[in-house]
Structure formats: C-alpha cells, structure tokens
Length: 112
Length: 114
Image 1: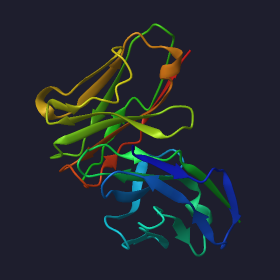
Image 2 (image 1 turned 30 degrees about the vertical axis):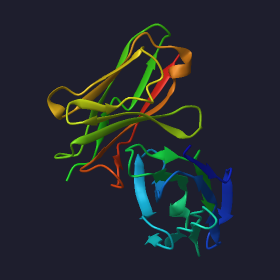
Image 3 (image 1 turned 180 degrees about the horizontal axis):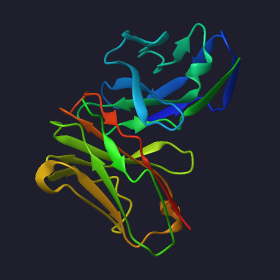
Image 4 (image 1 turned 180 degrees about the vertical axis):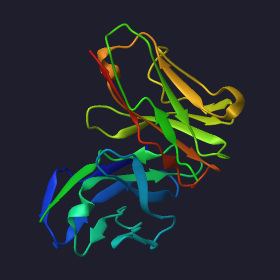
C-alpha cells in the first residue's frame, strides 16, 4: 500500500539552528512528494514538492530531495527562524489515484 | 484569488446530534476533496468529487457520513448521528486537475463531539 512515515515530534530548536525532518514513504508506482506546513490557526499550505527521482523542491529556505533509492524526502533548512514554528506534513500522491497520503505531522517550535 | 474556505471553523456538538460542514473550493477547480485528521494522527482521505460526481469515496468511514456537491460548486459533509470518534479536524481541498496536481487546502473545521 501507500504510506508516509515522519519523524516523531515535537521538535524544539533555537533560532538559527539547522533543521532536518525525516520523511520516508512506501508507494506503488512513481509518486509525487510534497511538504505541507500548517502555521498556528491557519490551514495547510504547500511548502514544496518534487515530482520525480532526484528532483529538489525548495521554498522559503527549505529544501527536500526526492531519493528513490532510499524512498525518502527529508525536509531541511539551514537556519530556522521563530516564524518557522508550525506543523509540517509530508505527503505523497501516486498520480493514478487522486488522494494524498499524509504522515502524522511534525510539530516544530523555534525559540529565540 | 480567494483560497479554499470552510465553515464553521469550530463546532462542538453532543453525541447523537447532526453537524454539517461546508467547503467552498477555489473558483474554477472541478476537483474537491475531503480529509480528516483525528487526534493528532495522519490526515486521511475521505472522498473526492469531480464537479458534482463522487469520483472516489473509499475513505468514508461509514454511512453516518454524507457528502454532497450540488451544482459542482460548494460541498457539504454531514455527520448524522455524530459519535465521539468523529471528533477531529476536517479539511477540504481543491485542485484544477487530477493526478500529480497540487491540492490547495482550506483552514479546516475543528469538530468536537461530547
């Protein structure tokens, strides 16, 4: 079947620290991979995506590379800010079906 | 361009009551999806509309849930009668096309069944 596994949270970092949130997936076929972010009190927003192996998605200083050999799509940021505090969701879609499969979400808190 | 909107933002009801959630997709998006996140777990797919037709309702948990999209614009999700385990956040999303298309999510409706 199709599933996404994310690292457990919550994660607390100091401002300017390096961030990695691990995400691995199981899927049939060739999925597209996404990171969504939910800021406090808001809905899910697309952060970045990658549609094929070795693609790198990037946005707002965040990056993730589609690694088919390790079935991973880890989210990284070199220097986090307080404003990055949010819940981050890794997701996939197979393309042939229309539903997204999400991980459980990782809560990030960045302290000054 | 307005995003996906959902109403209400919060709802607290008692077990056995009925609740109706509404979603307005982005204008021009034929595809509308409902998802649910229960108790901090993963966000799970409920169903998918293409215009007014149900394309996939494989994620609907049981027949207490009824989704409609009359006229192919906004959608409603009714829970009748509500049970305790229905508590969670209900998200709506829309997309212009299907396949690997990005889905745009609304802010969600937080439902608490007491």
